[in-house]
Length: 129
Image 1 (cartoon, helix red, strand yellow):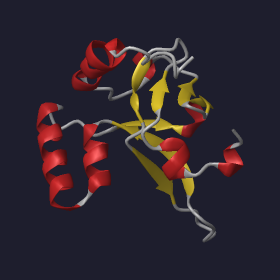
Image 2 (image 1 turned 90 degrees about the vertical axis):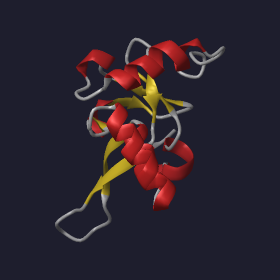
Image 3 (image 1 turned 180 degrees about the vertical axis):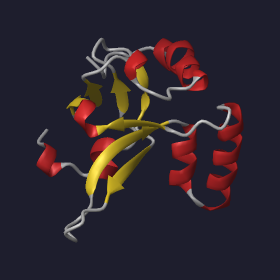
């Protein structure tokens, strides 16, 4: 898939994210765009992973509630931000050039969900290979 033809809603959001060893980290819950000084369109800066990012994406009353609850469970930690420079391949799964241990901020709750729940779903690893 060409990076020039990505549709954020279809090609990135809710895709599994796997590290360079194929370990499922989570899914793309939201995106961070950076403004350019020259006024041209914003550029994709990072993929956001975590329940707080998902709550922010939901918006409204439900989103605020989701963000608050997930923030308490995560001890107030912000969503994990994966800079786009760490993305090796966009596809059915977003493959990274780094290991899960190298990502700053990957909280205990996300690791537990990734290894203890998501990783045990039949076929969960097929999409990332």
